Length: 221
Image (cartoon, rainbow, N blue to C red; front, side, top):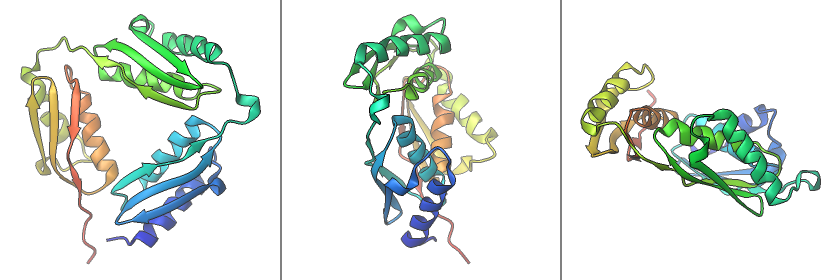
């Protein structure tokens, strides 16, 4: 099992490896496998990327992203301008469902509201606005309105988990309550935990995934 010092070193190296991140302005702390990122970044997309980099590191069991977004003066933009560009970006990614999504901007922070049928639409809307100039953060409040019958949700998720070569499906239990899914069991990395959740969200009709999988690292011989 990796020590906190090893995890800290590897997260710092992963951040420095990423050309889109100014790693010198980010501090990394690790306690019991949980990583905390502090400092500041120059865009919301950089903050998101730093979090994703840290989660990729072996041994990471949790993460707190306390990075502050400090936009350069050249990137400061009025909220109405950001809102108009957000609408355009969402429309380009979701031409058939963009009208059901409303971006609300307050001091550079975008809140996405509305209803969609599929989780990929929620995620795609968020990705569409994440890298817009002037954005300090994104809150995704888009609701899911399922149209698929929930009876096959459990079976389809279990089948998807078994097909995934990155997962040990026999260690994961799927519970369903209508369109809501709970994942229980053990995985061996944070990345594996996220992959299981992604597979659950991909099932038609799912409106909520409660990921209660615990990360248990392989013991080193």
